[in-house]
Image (cartoon, rainbow, N blue to C red):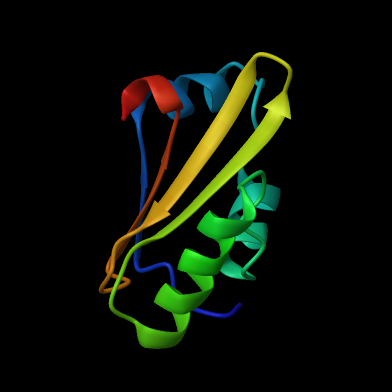
Length: 90
């Protein structure tokens, strides 16, 4: 773990997918906390790396879980909250 997630929050959509057995977010959360930002372009990866070093901006990851399912994970700038959400819930 390269940083603390703070409080973990799941949106209603993510919670529903977990309840249906269609999503297990633990692997993606581990990747996010380890600094693997998933399916981002290089410029966004660099922004995350700079935010991690400075501790002054949010951290954002995007993971393609399956062809029609994408998971976003956002950790607030102060590392107090990490939210797992679907792009449609942003």
